[in-house]
Image (cartoon, rainbow, N blue to C red; front, side):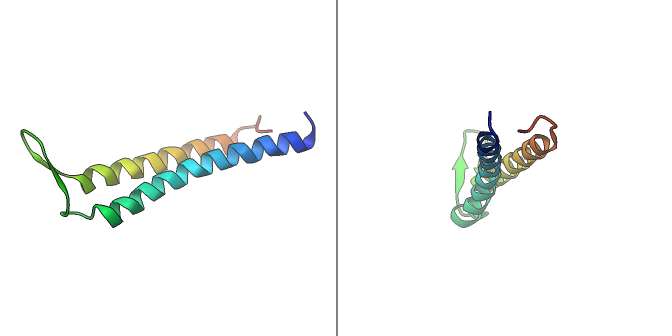
Length: 80
């Protein structure tokens, strides 16, 4: 593979990891904007769950997991 192809593959990998991180951050921002704490709750059979407290930790966890994936990808030696 030539240098241009290798740089395009590296750019594609970078954008893939970056878009995953930004998706987690966007989900967190959307949780703050559209489901603020105490505004929307889900009635289950045994309890009532506020959706913000369900969505916010999941989006933070996804963003952190994606950041770790980006860090591991960036630190590899075989990145073209």
